[in-house]
Structures are given as C-alpha cells and as structure tokens.
Length: 437
Image 1 (cartoon, one colour):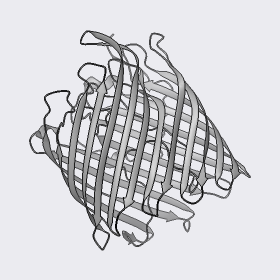
Image 2 (tube, helix red, strand yellow):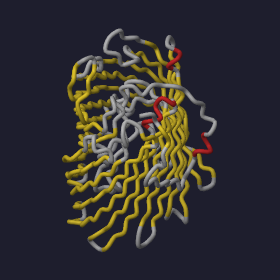
Image 3 (cartoon, one colour):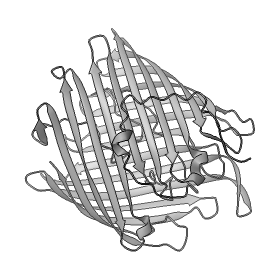
C-alpha cells in the first residue's frame, strides 16, 4: 500500500506555550530511521516535594527550572543562569556497528541559559530554558550536527488548586540512550499540564500530556505520530510523609500516514501507587498496574500486560545520593513494521562528594526489550529480544569560585540481540570544562 495523507483522528493540539517561531531558523538534515525506536517520556504524575522522587526517565541535558540565589544574573525580577560546556570525546564505535567499527574524536560544545521569573510576589513562577549542543567529528564530518532544545513552564499556585504547565521543543539527532543506533534527525514537541485539587486528606490530579514526533527525512514520514494521554488520579494522605494513589489513563495514538495498515490505536491503563519519605533521607515512589493497547488494524498485535515504574533515593548528604529506579512499559516502534516493543529497565545512580570540591558519579543501566511479533531478518524468523546495558563513571572538580569545573568520564554501551546485525559495543572517554554562572 502506498502511503497517503489522511486526517489525524482524535488529534488534539495543546501548545499553550508554543515556542516554535523562535527556532524557525533551524536547518534541515537527513538521516535514516532504520533500526530506530521512538521513545516517549512516560508520566509519573506531579512531583511531590519531600515525599516522592520522579521515577520516569527524563531527557538528559534538557534545561530544567531552577532558582538558586547567589548564582546567575538578576535583571529586575528575572533570574538568569547561563551555562557553557566544552569537551573532547573519543568514541570507539560512532555508528554502533556490529562489525567494522569506526572511531573518531568528537568536539562538543553545550551552551544555553535558564531563566525564572516569580509572579505575584512569588506565588506563581514562569520559567524558560534554551540549550544548544554542537558536535564536530574530526574524521567523519558528515556526522557533525547541532541539537537545540527550548523549554518553558508556568507554575500557578492558588488557594484551592494548583496548575503546572510545561512545553518543550527539541530539534535533535540524539540516539535516546541506546534505542537509536543511527543519529535520526527529528523534531519533538511535548506539552504537559497537571491540575491538582486538594480535599482535606484526599486530592485529585488531572494530567494532560501531548507528545508529537516528526522525522525530517521524507522516507521516515510513516513514523510521524502523536500520542495524547489523559490521566486521572485520586490520592489519599496516609500521614505527613506517605500518599497512596489510584490512576486511570487513556492514550490516543495517531499516525499522520496510513501505511502498512492502520497504525492508529487507543490504550487504557490502570495503576496503583504509593509515594513518600522514610525519615529525612529516603524518598520513594512505586506504581504497579496494567495497560491494554489496541490498534485499529486487526492484523497488528496488541499489548495486554502489566506495567510498573518506581524509584528509591537515599541522600547521603546534601550533595551525595544513591538512586535506584526502573520500569516496564510498551513504546511505539519503527523496527520492521513492528507495532511496539516492551522495555524493562533498571537503573542505578551514585553521586558522591569525595572532597570539598571533588565529586564522583557512576550510572548503570540494564534494559531488556521484547518486540511485538516475529520478524524475518537475514532468513531467520524470530521475535526480536535485546539486552542493552550502559555503565559509566566520572569525576568532577570545582574551582574555589564553584562557577567553573573540570570533568572526566568513561562510558561503555552495548547491546546483545537475537536479531542479525544488531549487536554492538562502544566505549567513550570524555574530558572537558564546564562553567555555570
């Protein structure tokens, strides 16, 4: 069947903070989405300060709201915090190839700024962040690229309720951990809004999340899609440090092109959760439930199974901590006309202050991914199953002014797959300097 444009059913556009016009100058590139998987951030609900810890995976390097007195610049009521980073990186396998590895030395520059402005005497807060990442490859110049991220937010705190809004735009070729083995140029838009209404020991959370991904190469238009999710939660305060919650979510999955059958679908999701604090140093969050994902095309496999997400953080000090987090959930896939794959993830992070200005950090990740149906690759028919892991450690030293730091990092990424030509391993060594004013 030839691809043809069809109206996007159930398409809901939520762009209350649309910053696209500010990045209209972004130039286009070309990339292939072969063996790439589209990862959508999963919601874990509103972060409850001092009671829980966010358990979902976030986009690393994305500017986040902040407010730190003594640093940054003050322009009236606006607090601006510029940041810049330069690193030189040796990577042993820049294409994540199974064989014939190509290495390169990559120069990376990250620069941007975060800003916050209190409103109505600090009752509300508006935030805006921009980050640009430029990578220049010494040998394989065709891989050089520039990623850009723009994010805004608005926190409104009224006496009977609160509203938290976030909007982001990414122009990126990032491989999103190890699911993208190619550098796939795409634009990602996400809006998230949470309304919280307390009723004594009970409270309600209503969340709307809209995620849209657009691939820049015309060959990948078949993967452009939108996922709109409505969450409704009800919670109960068991005590000053513990909450229990019940959650229902409905997902609308909409593809812009109708090809290889109708990929649109819907999903219902139920989960129960508990989040809270154990003493003054430990915070936790755990959700267990199930999802039923049904596609319009009856020939496509549906998902029906359990989902989970959770995190546990122990603060060793105000600057040192241990964190364990993980989850299980299905994601839309772009591999061999698959509907989805189920990702099972465990992650461990340890940050330790060794001396007054000297820090150590390590991060370990293990994924087990299973795809939705049998694929035939190189004459072998099997359901694709991958083990993906990442290990890394780094050190960072801050100068006495605490604005400038020097860092060194080592990472090892690998994938062991039962599907032909999808194994790889890659090592990265980085040295750099960072300035946060």
